[in-house]
Amino acid sequence: MTDQQNIFEIERLEDLRYTAMLSQDVEALDVLLHNRLLHVHSTGNQHTKGAYLNGLKNREWVYQQIDRFDQNIVLQSDTALVFNHLLLRLELKGQRMQLHNQALSVWIREKGAWQLIAMHSGLEPSEPR
Image (cartoon, rainbow, N blue to C red):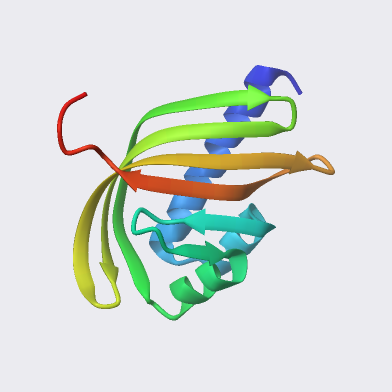
C-alpha cells in the first residue's frame, strides 16, 4: 500500500470507530481496538480495552454526538498518528456533558491490519493561543 492508501484506510477506520462509539457497537470496537489499548480521557481517567468496552456496554458513558474537525494524519511506517479537535456531547454516569477536546489517536499495523493502540484527549485551552 502507498502512504496515501494507508492514510485513506486510517480515515476509514476512524470513521468506523466513531460510528461504533455513537452506536455503542462493542463488537465493532473489539476488532478496531488493540488488546494493549490505553485510552486516556480528558478527565485524566484511563481505560484499557476491556475497561473501555465494559464502560460502553454498561452505559457508564453514552456518546450522543461527536464532531471532528481539523484532522491531520501523520504516517510513519507502521504507525499512524491522528490529530483531531472534537466536540463531544455525552452522558457520563447519567450526567450530561459537552466537551471541546484535542485528541491524539495512535494506530499501529501488525500482520497487515491496523488497530488503535492509544487514544489521548485533553480539553481545548480556554483562551486563544
